[in-house]
Image (tube, rainbow, N blue to C red):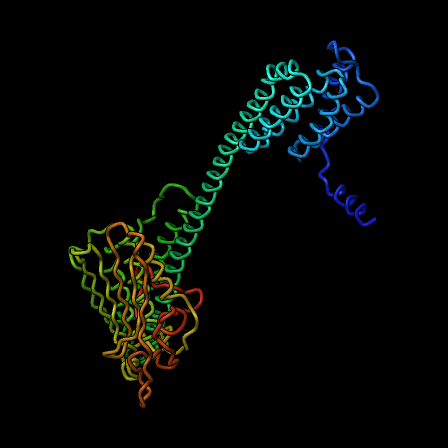
Length: 475
């Protein structure tokens, strides 16, 4: 009982033949029937009797599953053929069913199985007939070439199908690769545009805030002796920052539109724009010393743009976290040995309370705010990595302040180039409350080590991730 239930379960799990398989089996059955009824009958043979028709039906009916179970169908189709021929039924009738079974087996492969099975079939059939009648065995051996021919045809079809399938698979893989490459390039371009927009807006907003603080200080510090020239310079600086930001924003948005350059747009930033960055920072009260070696000016455009953004972000962070009166030294040199551009941006940290008042920038952005998570150093790291360079950002150990150094290769970066970030541990603030070598803003006291670029000095506020733009970095 259990064995019967198990057999029924296996039968239910069999794959069902498709409608096309059933129709093809019906056609083969019709051909076999015509041969059995109207085919020539050998002298020793006769038309199938009832048992012969049953054997023919079994040989043909199993062909409906030939594509799902080629080996099983071949065996089930050959087994009834032996008693069919032994009973001297018409010998030509089962030939179409046998040809289909052999062909299906060869198409399914593998090649070794096809060779062994077809050869074994011929040898067994010839041996059995030879033992019964030597003349019939010799005749079967002479006519058994059709078995080999059908097997070779099936093998050829299998090879052709595999070849076509391999071509289609390669084409689909190539198409997927093209789509993935296009999607990756789109994502990279979006990231680059987002970085540029962030740099532009962060710089412009911070610069306008500093210059506004300067103007407000001039108005309230000594109204009776108002320095109209200084106030006009501060307001003119705000207007200039707006003009520059608008021009650069137009250039960036033009890339998104995919059109040609229009009037008012500017080329991508490079090392020639560092003097504008320094001048913009000085207009806000920062003391910026810029030194750009002549050999460093002729670098690839991508390296120049990355260097510009790194200096821009470093100046932004210096002003934002150390106050508008910060002292910053920028050095850009070219190392001819490895062919690399070297950048160093070092500041002296936030000034004391007296210097902050004297600088006229009390309330400058970041001067009295606790550091919040941002992407300052992360943005600079991405800029350096985009050209195969390295970047270090850490609080100074020899004095108060922060240092950013970068090495940008001017030749194609190899796979071994990896970007590194080093940071020094923050030192505690001194008893007077002034900034220690790695201390953050005066009021915030945040960590300026910036090891992960998420807090302290390297961390701009969310949404203000890198430095100023053209007129950026005023203190």
